[in-house]
Figure 1 (cartoon, rainbow, N blue to C red):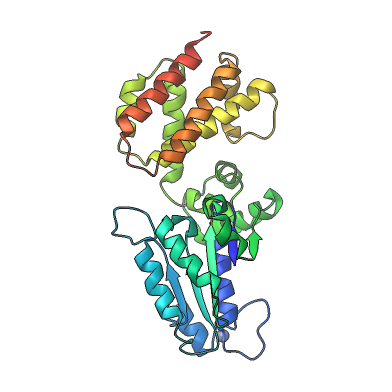
Figure 2: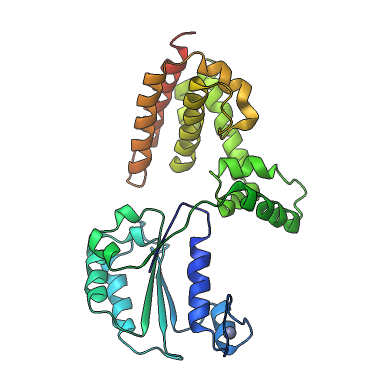
Length: 309
Ligand SMILES: [Zn+2]
């Protein structure tokens, strides 16, 4: 099975629930595992021998799933399930498999063992080969409607009773509607970091901050967080440059700043920078010189916004 969908919508939770349903020892299992049988207790403790998880090794330099890991799993997989009648093998994220690993997996999928269930979890199914995809039953999870996600998020935040509960709708918008991502954003330093990035981006556009100095300060940050913030901000800017009253913007709290900047940009140049940012995000997993990358992007951003000032 291939579970696909954007970051933070609960793909892993679904994979774990599926394993729970398959492995639960209760007589009548319906929507959820019983939670009390020996199998469920082992699963919850993460010690069930028939549920195996394959992910990139934490200490490895690359964030890849290596062929050796897949081969080991496939060798163990040929064993019959230890306790029940089925073995569940989960790969997260499946697109982290390097080509050799994918090849090893394909060999196994070509001669499937009836008692094993493979669950591949990915945000980027297009990065898996067509041959692997064609051998999986695909479950594409959509981003839930805000009318479903927002009450859920508000309830989780209330449960955690944070002294400082940020605005749930704002977090959900920043998370592109993905509820788990919004929850992570609301309950970690990520929200403050995001605000700081937006302040830097707007400061550079207004000529208040020096792009080179900001690029230097950004070096210590996760490249994906920086690029995500720039992409979201520029996307909003291009949206309001088409229609200043557009409702579907991510930074609803910064509409005045957006509208003011939108009057100063050339949309075609904005789209070119957006393309460049998207390309940068695509290569961001590869080792890069962050200073040079951020400098190049921020200098372009500064030029773009100073164009008609
Ligand atoms: Zn059970």
